[in-house]
Length: 206
Image: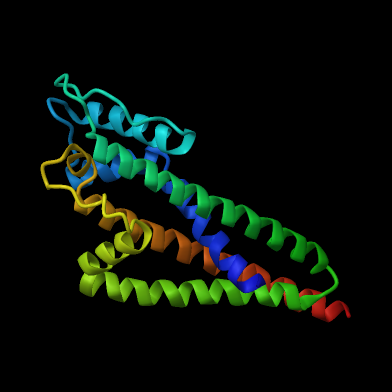
């Protein structure tokens, strides 16, 4: 269980970083995201409100700069479903964090715990390499499959001119997926290095 818990935790930490305005604003600008009747600063403001509702349980009811409703009921419903999935993943990550911390406390005298953490980091990198290949070759198919699995109700497909797609266009998700992969690989590499050194140090003490 410890390698899997490590893998999930190392994926959750970069995800939280990508929910910050620092990344979201940058990715929206780079992907060409926009809102009706607004400038980039308006897109940032609406996105901040959207992420806030996503994290804190809001209703996703907000007004676009041109005075129209930013999201349709279907779009708001989809975002509420996204929140359920996010909450479930973060709750799982919190449990994994507790498991990893508990194991590493015992790892002061048992090198196998550190070795298991290192193995989890390697597994994550391997999984991300596979996903990167799939993403390069068929990102659209993977993106659709991801939504079909997590949102079987089907309320995730919107026209290209919908406000949700305008604010977070396809390129936004490509950029975010790439950034998540890079951050997770870097974090996994650091974790592997530290865990291997600790495993060696603990083993030498026995």
